[in-house]
Length: 154
Ligand code: HEM
Ligand SMILES: *[C@@H]1O[C@H](CO)[C@@H](O)[C@H](O)[C@H]1NC(C)=O
Image (cartoon, rainbow, N blue to C red; front, side):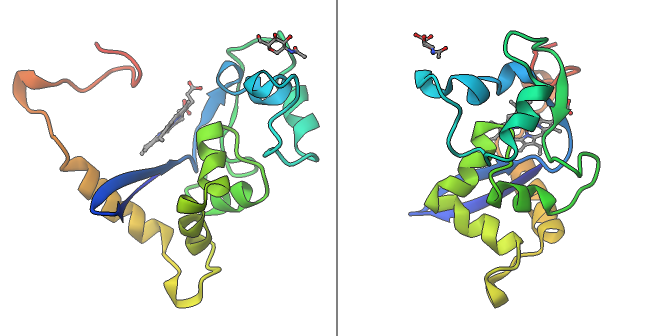
C-alpha cells in the first residue's frame, strides 16, 4: 500500500498502490477474460503472467478467492510492487494504470531508482504521505467513525 500526494497544476492527486495485502478474484477477473467487453484479456497484463492469474482465478470460479496484490512479496513492505507494475504484473487495473498512465509512471520509476538523483525513497515518502493524508478533512467526535470493516459503515 502506498499513498503519495503529487501537486498537479495546483491541485492534489493521490497515487495509491498496494505493496501488501490481497484482493478477491471478483474485483479483477474481468481483466483476465473479457476486458472492457473486448472478449479478450487486458493487454496491459504481461502475457507470461496471464495464464498464472487465469489458473488462480478461473472463469466462473470462486469470486471470493484471494490472491496477492504484490506477487512474490505479499507480506513485505517494499518496492517490488513498483517493479511488478513495470512488468505488467499489477493485479488491480487501478494499480496497473499507475504505470500505463504517463502522469503517474514517472513516480513509479522514481521509486525504482531509474531517475538518478530524482529517485525517491519509498519508505520515507510513505511516512510523509500518511501524515498529509491524515490531516485531510479529519472527522472528529460524532462527525465520523473508525470503520470495523474498511469498506462498510459500522
Ligand atoms: C486509488 C486508490 C485505491 C484503490 C482504487 C484501491 C482499491 C483496492 C481494492 C479493489 C482492493 C481489494 C479489495 C478486496 O478484494 O477485498 C484493495 C485492497 C487493499 N487496499 Fe486499496 N485501494 C486504493 C488505495 C489504497 C490505500 C491508499 C491504502 C492504504 C494506505 C490501501 C490499502 C489496501 C490494503 C491493505 C488492501 C488489502 C486488504 C486485504 O489484504 O484484505 N489501498 N484496495
Ligand atoms: C464480453 O462481454 C460482453 C458484454 O457482457 C458480451 O456481450 C460478450 O459476449 C463477452 N465476450 C466474451 C468472449 O465472453
